[in-house]
Image: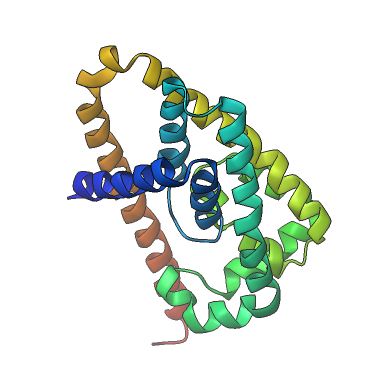
Length: 212
């Protein structure tokens, strides 16, 4: 099931990049940075694969990806700035978010906002959602844009390089692809299950003293 979903998603991603070129890379990375969990781990390696075919350059896809990250992060930033707490209070339960998360984010950004954005852009999953709490914490926009770009560029460059190397050695690596898909599927299911269990347990513990 998970493998099929990943295959369908990869087919769509590859279609967008093949049809649009560099703007397609930027568009997909913008979606990924707008709090929508579209995996950059699929976007950039495929673009890197096309580098191996001679269609793109490695530095070109890294630049396009980083620009897309900045573009997608700006609306997510403003959503957090102007509607963050109200949005989480009303819809956060559907995304396993609550006011406690926002309190933590605001305090953390007051102390080290720049480092938070820079480091988060180099981390899987976290990078997708970091713009929202940055907006809630009202991190200065100029610094937010700079650190988003600085953190996103090496991430895009690294994933693109991996894809390029896979493309250059595709004949040797093909027998291992299906095994990798299975491992990725198991890890995704395990990570989601753990996150849901952790958040659900925390809510039950919080509600216990005061009743339902």
